[in-house]
Amino acid sequence: MKTLIKFENQKLNELRSKMLKDLDREHYAILYGKFHRVSDDTCIITIKDQKYYEKGYDVQTIASIHIGSEFRAQCLSEIDQRIDVDTIVDVHTHPFGKGKPFFSGVDTDDEKTMKEYLVSKGDTIHYASIVLSQDMYNARLWEHDGKRAFPEKAIIKTQKVSESMPETASGSRNEPTRFEMFDRSILALGIDTIKAMMNDQVVTVVGVGGVGSIIAENLIHMGFQTINLVDFDIVEKSNLNRLVGATYEDAENGSKKVDVIAAHLKAINPFATVSAYCRSVFDSDVEKVLALSDWIFLTTDNYSSCVRVQELAFKYYVPFISAATNILVEEGSIADVRGEVILVRIGDGHCLNCLGKIDKKELIYETHPDPEIRAAMVQKGYVKGHDVKDPAVKTLNAMVATIATDVLINQYTERQKDQFVIIYENNEAQTIYEDEDCIKKRESECHVCGGKNG
Ligand SMILES: [Zn+2]
Ligand SMILES: [Zn+2]
Image (cartoon, rainbow, N blue to C red; front, side):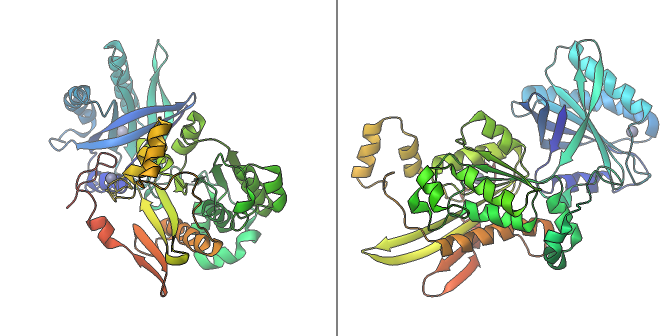
């Protein structure tokens, strides 16, 4: 069983700084989480709340047992009353040293008792534990086979690699042996950044059209080694003005976009793992792919898939970057050319919904089951309809795709401050700017991200 314990942005830092402030004594906290079984052998625990045990650390070693029963009992009854959480994660520190901490015999007996207690009570609450040293961690999920409780290793995931802790001193990171391809990138970004991007990072591009195909190509050039492509479209001749990797023959054969782009990426770097999913985002296999991604690029051309991908991103705590372009043509001439890149990490407090980026009328049109109502919406001019082809050119797509890719690279280098909404305009002059107003003016309460204003 592979278990990922996932934190909102900056929440692991918060936990560590609170618990490791005092290095003279062990400290305790309990996290509330939501358990998701993603597949037969993988589960994800998303952390929703942190409760610190604040009082009475007089007896250090026995403390673990004493605190355990009272404090936990309180937490357990709170979890029972809440519907958003079903998992308890014990956290304690071994503050005296650095390096990989190990659970002591006392820790293990105590936690085993706890798991067996939960099972005997017929409780469906899941149980996991984390021990923190000054710079590393050890984590596990407690399972029960009907006879006895036993631990399985767990891994902590944060929104950004820079916030995460190494799991072991030597690291499970493979030393990449094919650096020659990235010699020049290493000169620019440094070996550590390139390694962080190469190791254990899974990036999924949803929608490999004009923008998504260029992002995918950028990712392979930047050094990402595991890339998933999701799109159910086939290549048409009208795509050939902008679809990276697609040929006239692909359009004649009606090849799948994901297959064409995957072959293009593999031709550039045959050592990379590129998986093609010719599926809709509503497919259950795609849910698994998204759940296990470290980053998602959202570049589809319809609102219903944006809403779906965003819903899954929040369910499984996967940060994403949305990239979109728009060319407005009025009476035969160009009125507006622009693109938009939005960074959404879980815990940042904004999403496409509260930023006003989901057109509600278009969404109803896309998802309404009654074709007559859909036709009426087009006729009344509420929406433009599916048959209308939007204007599109590669230069605009390439600009926006590259800005979006750089937003991701910045999550590894942290060279620039985070910009959540970036606009590219090509009207009177070419300009790129951060749209801070968009964040300030977001809807005050949001049911998707839970973000609040102020
Ligand atoms: Zn311990
Ligand atoms: Zn929101």
